[in-house]
View 1 (tube, rainbow, N blue to C red):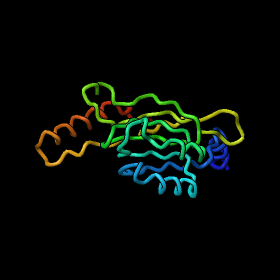
View 2 (view 1 turned 135 degrees about the vertical axis):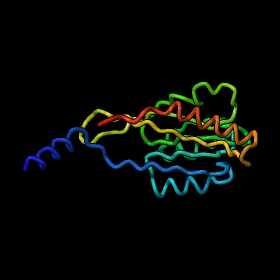
View 3 (view 1 turned 60 degrees about the vertical axis):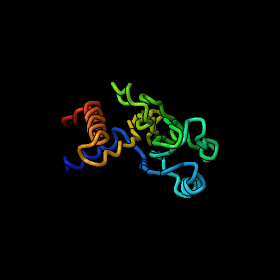
View 4 (view 1 turned 180 degrees about the vertical axis):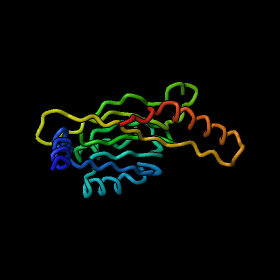
Length: 165
C-alpha cells in the first residue's frame, strides 16, 4: 500500500501531457517543403527538429509552417547545412552555435528551452532541445575528419553532466 501511495504522490507532482518530439534530416527544406507541411498537418508533433535545411534564414519557408500553428527559429546557410526548431509551444533560443565555436561559420547547431504546458496547472515545464547537424568527417584521418572530432569534443564539453538521483 505504501508503494502505491508513494507512486501516486510522485505522479501528481508535475503532470505532463505526452510530448511528441521528431527529428528529421530534411536534405533541403525548399525541395521538401510541401511534404513536410503535409506531414506536420497530419501528424501534429509538438516539436520538429530539422537538419540539413540548406537555405538561409531569410529563405526558410516560415509562412507554410506558421499557418499550421508552429513557431520557428532557424540557423541557416545557403545551399549547405542548416538547422531549425519548429514548436507548437513557446520557446526561447539560448544558443545558435556551440560555445567557443566562433571560427566555424557552418550552420550546425541551435539550442532552445521549450515551455511545455502541464495538465491542470497554469505553470509550464521547461524542456531543453537541440537540433544539430554533425560535420561529415570522411575519410578518417583527413582535415574534415579532424574538424568533426574537434566539433564533437566541443559538443561533449558543452553537454551538462548527468544528474544523480
